[in-house]
Every structure is written in C-alpha cells, then in structure tokens.
Image (cartoon, rainbow, N blue to C red):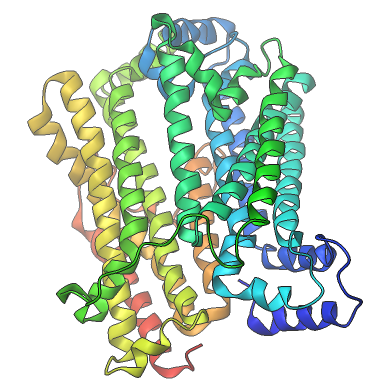
Length: 553
C-alpha cells in the first residue's frame, strides 16, 4: 500500500499542472503509482502462475512418457466424472493435451484471482482508505483510477500470457498449443478484471467487493465442474456459462478453437463499460449497495481486543472456511479414483506395488492434498496478519489504543484470533475430505477424525509462515506485507516443485512443510510440530515487542 506522503507528492505533481479536461486526466501518473505499489506482489503472482505451467509440464513428462500411458489415463478420465469435475475434460492424448487438462483450469483460476485483487486494490480499496479522495482533489479525471486498474490488470495478464506460452514452447511442446494455453489463461484473467470492476462499484468496501467477485468465481468454478462431469446427463451446456470453462474449451494442443477467446474478451468489455457507467452514477466512496447499520449498542463480544479482532475477521474467515470445506469435498470425491489418475501401465502398477499397494497410494495422495491445504491455510493466515498493519496505516487502531488497551493486548488479541481461525479452516478442509472419502468407502466414522487430524498437523507450519509477516509488522512494518507473501511463495515453490526439480535437501529444509508429518499414512512425531510451534511463538513475540517499542502509524 502506498504511503500518504507518496500519494500527497503525486497529488502535488498533478495539481501543479493544468486543470483536468477529461475523465482520464492524470491516468499516466496514477499508472506509475500503481506499478510502484505492485512492484513486489505483481511479479510474485506472475512468477507463481508461470511456474505452474513450467514445473507441471516437466513432472507430467516424467510420469507419462509414452502414448500408451496417456491413452490409458484419457480413457480413465472419460469414464470418471469425479476427475472431470476436478480437472475438466481431456481432449486428445498428447503430452500437451495432458498438461492442459491437468493445469489449465487452475491456471485460469489463479489468473482470475490475480485480476480480482489488482482491480479491487486500485479502485474500491483506494476509495475506502481515502487515497483517491486526496488524489482526486487535484486535476485527476473521475474515471482515471478505474481505467488505470483495468490497464494494470491487462498488462499483468499480457505478461502472464507471454511467459506461460514461452515456457511451454521452450519445453518442447507445439508453439500453437502453447500460445492457445497462454491466451486461454490470460483471457480468463481479463474476464474477471471486468467482473471485479463491477463488484468495486456495487460494494462500499474493498472486502465486500473482493467477496462478491470471489463468490462469483467459486460459483463459476462449480458450474464448470458440473458441466464437465455431467455431460452425459445433458449438463454440458453449464460449461459454456463459465469463463473458466471457456479456457478449457479453447482446447490447447487438441485442435484449438480460437473463436472461444472472444467470449472472455467480450466479458471484459461489457464489465468495463458497465463499471464506468455505474461509477458515474454514484458518490465518491459509496457503493451501490447501502451498508447495513450496526446495532445501537455493542455486545459482550466487543468488550475486549480479542472479540473486536474476531468481529473484524469473521467475514473473511467465513469465506475461507466455506472454500476449504468445498475444496475438501472435491478432494475426497476424487480420492477413490486416484488409481485411475495415475494409469494402469505395467510400470506404474509395479511402482504402486513397491510403495505398498493401492492403500499406500491413496494415503500418499491424501497426504499431498493435506500439505497443499496447509499451504493455502498459510495464505489465509498471512492475509489475516497483514490486516494488523492495514488497520494501523488506516488509523483504525488509534481509537482503540486511546482507550485503556495496551499495544500488547491489541496485537496479541489479533494474533490469537488468526491462529484460532487458521486451525478452524484446516478443520473445515479435513472435514470435507473425510466426509466425501468416508461416504465413498462407507467409513465416515474413521475417516473424518483421521483427516481432520491430518489437517491440524499442518497448523504449526502454516503459523510459522504467517509469523514471518507478523515479525515484520512489529520490527519492519514497511516491508511486512511483502515479507509474508514472499515467504509463502518461497515455501509454495519448494513444496510443489522442489522434489520434481531435485533441489538440494538444504533448500527443501527451508520450508516448514518439509518437516511436518506426512499424514495420513506417514509416521507421526511431536518433535517437528513442537519446534515449528516454538518458531511461530518466537516470531510472534518479536512482533509484539516491536509494536510495544516503535511508533504506531
């Protein structure tokens, strides 16, 4: 987030010029400010999404070396609705088609999330903090901030397209298919840039705008899954209602259908046009939806910092918990088909027998999914910790600290709620996996507690990552937001791609998730959990010590 002095300097630069003559006056200066503010997070987003294409293609190339192995997998996918719900339709049986089936849906999902956060940050979030009011008091056109937000999202998706297509082409895949993959991914991001722009006009808060856009994204993902898995029951048309579905319907590496790309581009144009129209018909800082009035008197829950922190975080927590539950259900549904996912060739069958048979393979798959849920939970924790610094910058902490509330109670209450909520979202994920898998094998009473426990085993590692951002909030607040997300991105890269790239063990050990127990199926030990928890506590203590000694604000 840009500091007030930075915005003030920008206002002075623009104000020193001539009066605004159009709605887009001052857009160039605002674009420079936006790129400066995104100089860390935007490369992290693009790097992570590009790495998915690169490492995913590399890993699948090692597992499915022959056309027979890919054909066997394709046949399994065509007869398994759960796999089609999770990953989409499998068009063709080439290596490129396999990579598109396995990764394109989630690459498009990531591009959509990137666009949502970018557009909301530079529109509604800036209005909420008063930054646009400061800049808008100068010679800046009313529509310049929205235009800049859309332009930044377009530039980010353009770079993502180029890099994704490049890494796929360099890895030996057909250039035409690589270009189609990159375009399908980026165009989904562009479609959601338009959707997020509308959400930013409808809601009066940044959190509400992100909630609207992400809820719509979740609905669209479910429509795509229902259309892909229910094609034999006349539901294939649902895929055409989803921008994520449009990405897979481009069919990279399987007879590309370029005309489908017109659908997300039309969505971008329609969303942008509607957002400009709505922006001209509302007051600055207000949304089209009126904010609900709170109660006249505060309840007992707001009698202390912990209750206040819960009140402020409960909306985001509810969304994350629901997402974990739905994601867990999806993982549990597909678990019984894991044998089909890896194929039935003689070499794969021998490898499965060596690790202990189908049961061991299922446990390994579930353990990998639980590690991924732990990594996503760390993302929730990092975002929740970052709110501590956001409240400080916005001045929302000043009325609280002016009362008889110490800095330690303020910061400590926030961190306690983050820890409890992180544990709760992991429980939701484990519950979803346990319910779906338990129902499939008629063993709910065993699988639910088993997989909830496997989810909670990821808690110390997730909190250790979030505690890095917390320590920076207390000691180096200017870099706190970037520090938490960089730590998460690094651990995500290590966890997802480190083993496939044969990285040195000393690098793998830098990720907290390397040391946690691999449950279910793995050996459980309290020692790594104790040390990871101790690291998280020490870093949280550094946060509180810094808050106690430094100037607030």
